[in-house]
Figure 1 (cartoon, rainbow, N blue to C red):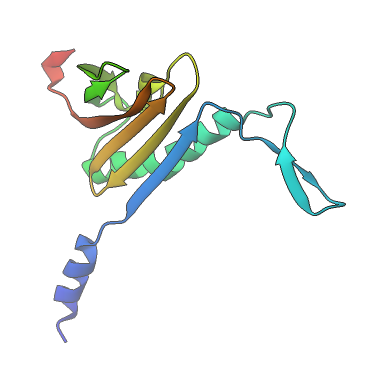
Figure 2: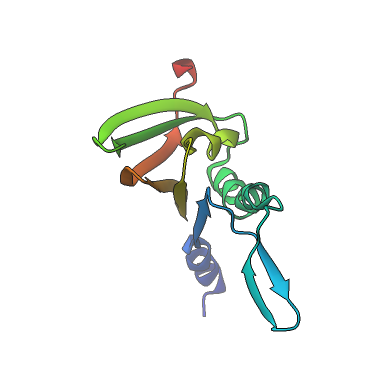
Length: 142
């Protein structure tokens, strides 16, 4: 068996990572008496926890797979934002992939890292699923 060839094939297999975040509080309280959890009346910082988990699970592998760092200039594009499905783009730093898509109000962000490609679908009360793509911007595009 040609183990070198097998190693090359295995190196080609890339894990797909999906990660979902919501603006709604997801904190829970565990009741030891009933051995169950229920929604908490107060937030213990779940959004910050989600951001940290997203950084570890998605952003770090994305940067590593592309050979980028936090300061890499990223082109963000969507062709169907808001209720009227308008197109738009912006350039951000790679470290801003969450903050660039947040809204003032309730929303859900569903990120997918497939190989080197990162995408996000954002949904809210008036946006049923705007697809955002992220790619390296031209350095003079700032």
